[in-house]
Length: 269
Ligand code: NAD
Image (cartoon, rainbow, N blue to C red; front, side, top):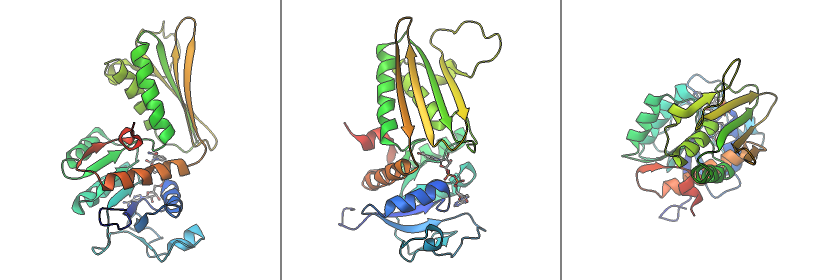
């Protein structure tokens, strides 16, 4: 509910995609309203009732390429792609709505634009909306700080269709490790190994991306010393966990002041 006791209204950008459909399904189980389901201009789905795609009752909503001016939007949730992200951010700014995005593969320029937007609207971008991963980031940051000399490697596996590597989540976990050690990730990251690599330099953070099948997302952060090893592993069983996390974030963000937030803020203490 918002301050006036009205249900939070969410416009969904990328509504016909795998994640978009997961958000539509998840929204039926919470007290929020999907007020717009946005698809790419030219999509064959424009004006098609959502129930035709989802095969269940989802009210009278139809897919649209643009946001009707009279539609209420407290938060805009974006799961589209890097090429469509700018339009989503512009829409949130135009409507002064909270902006929640899970789109990965963004350029440094796009990340900068999102940061600038946070002066005007509340913004939350994360490569992984799972609460389990948010907690794992905390664990990784603490372990990296407490065990500064242990080698750290991050291994991820995703379905064969995933277009970017390593995953945004693996990079976010790497940033948590680097942050725990007061290092810049760019300076210590190593992506894969092959051939005569020589010994592992101290302080390196290694990334390894596995691809295959229909794996939704698995991440392991390994800390290794000479005598012992700690592994934090998270396995996502389905996309619904990201969808539920994004809606939880949207509800939290709709009540927040302009600024930059992450899932750690939503998770609380
Ligand atoms: P997808 O390709 O199934 O869906 C993307 C959808 O966006 C497509 O339906 C496409 O038609 C639509 N789209 C393209 N241009 C658009 C526009 N201008 N306006 C509106 N819609 C437009 O991809 P997906 O698996 O749903 O993933 C979407 C994004 O979310 C990817 O970047 C993916 O990496 C990311 N993702 C993030 C999380 C997370 O927790 N943060 C989880 C899973 C996926």
